Amino acid sequence: MTATPTTDEICRMTGTEQARLIRKKQLSPVEITQAVLDRIHALDPVLHAFCTLTEDSALQEARAAETAVMAGEPLGPLHGVPVSVKDLICTRGVRTMLGSEAYKDFVPEEDDVSVERLKAAGAVLLGKTNTAELGYGAVGHNNISPTTRNPWNIDKTPGGSSAGSAAAVAAGMGALTLGSDGGGSVRSPASFSGLFGMMPSFGRVPAYPGCRDPRYPGLSSWESTEHIGPLTRTVEDAALVLSVVSGPDMRDRHSLPGPEFDWFEVMRRDIRGKKIAYTPDFGGCRVDPEVRTLTADAAQVFAEEYGCELAEDAPDLSEFLDLHWMIILRDSDLVGMRALHRQGLIYMPHLRAAMEQSVTAEDLTEAAKMRQEVVNRMWRFMSRYDLFLCPTVAYPAFDIDTYGPSHIGGAPVESLSGGLPSLWPFNHTGQPAASVPCGWTSEGLPVGLQIAGRHLDDPLVMAASAAFEAARPWAHRWPGIVTAQEARA
Image (cartoon, rainbow, N blue to C red):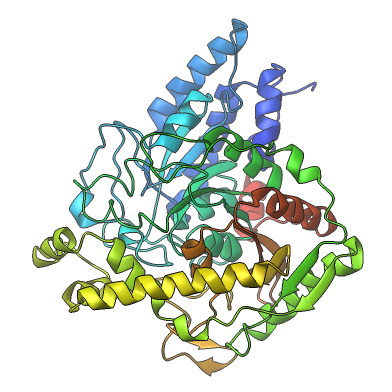
């Protein structure tokens, strides 16, 4: 490299490339961090991806990382690479608001396990990214931070609840970010924002204190459904993050043993001949016509270019469409959250209504039984297939400051409770699932194809995602707000 790359060139790099150039002493952690901060200063006043920016400490960490490089010290896999973290994930000494009035001044005393591991790998923390209130919504707004906007269309949501994480990476405000997915909150924003989002198997990435500390109502929720995972522009970048944050920890009783595979090696595995099921609509659910077309064409890639056996098929989950919310209530600290509600500290209308809802023990145990049936139906279905494909979400990004689209395919939407069961089932089964960009609508909005694997088969999900990326690459596409900023620079 004969000259230092420009800010725009640095911000277009993958995290893997940034790490490689740092290790080769061809690019400084300070140069990368400053470039990303410059991009944040240019675009985040419009996008509002970050709710807390740790600029001073990020530069301090970058300078320390540069000193270590020049001194020839051992370097971690993420040494000097800027990362952001969703504001539902605890960061020691850094404000973690959870999108909630109740936690607007909360500064955790300890890092979440995943953050601890990012830091140990040498990452530079850029700050915290905006989220829906306590994670209870697939949106990017709350009542304490400005609404996060989608870089592909600033009048649309980037999805949620990992909204800020998705907007940040989609706009080049850091190549790597960590989100969380308790019902689609990594995969939905990946679909809406043109990113790769990987929800690894339940327990693959430990969580603590998030979802595990009963002192904090809301933060302690989602214990049996939450998956920690990356949102990135490439599959390789997701592998880089997962190679750092996965593995067992005694603080999370659900955490899995260390993977008996290499996250980078599995991307190169052959998927030819695999048996794959695809459904456009789970047997008749409403799906946007462009989403249906784009995802159907994407599914054909596996048959036409990789010789996979593709069949249109889906598990019957039609009688369980209201299950997810009841399981989330079961996982919530209703006593603590209802106390917050009585203090006027709950904002979202559907969450306030839930706090006022009468829930019996029988309601909760019936939900647990229904979850068992979902798991059983899914494993029986997956016993016939290696992978399962479907639209990640039934529609493209919807308007900001709303909780869902007003129309799907031109028809008005009265309720989303009976919508496409594409996201939440895999939180209840614990299966790995990813969203890959598979096209853009006529209005220029990204669409995602979901790739789900059998229980614990993260390797095949990563391999299939990498194969699709090789056949239909997406990372070269950038939102107009980015290209316009680069033209002005």
